[in-house]
Image (cartoon, rainbow, N blue to C red; front, top):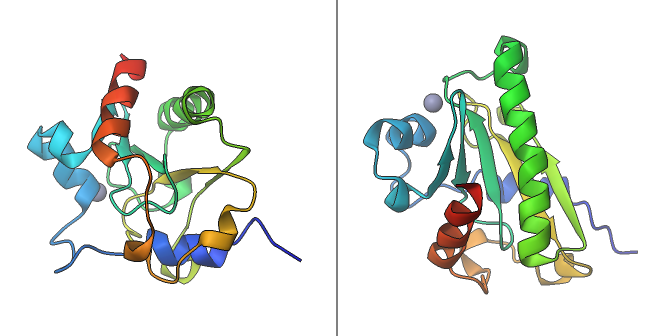
Length: 162
Ligand SMILES: [Zn+2]
């Protein structure tokens, strides 16, 4: 039986790091650098941001994170929770229309034991899913063929989030 929800794989891929590793928190780094296209920051809100996953599990894999470097869900205040969840809901609509997936995985890897690649800074993963896509899932993130280029997705998403 095929299992479409394969969280161990998501965790594995989500914890993939670029060659050489991150020097620091890539979310805080992207917020500080103001080089959004290069850092794949698609949207900046008052309390949160949307970043394309540079090592996507699937086409359209996005991250939604609070601006504040907080690693625990209970540390978020009401405004941070509201803004991140509203953005996730909006993105499901936008990506749903853009990419016509059959479903989504939306979730958090809380803590290293749960597969968080960046345990210090919370980020929700939003992963569009297509029927049967687990059949193609590679063992290593970098062997996966991503049909839509990150840059193309980035530009369309920035436009939709204006
Ligand atoms: Zn951070």
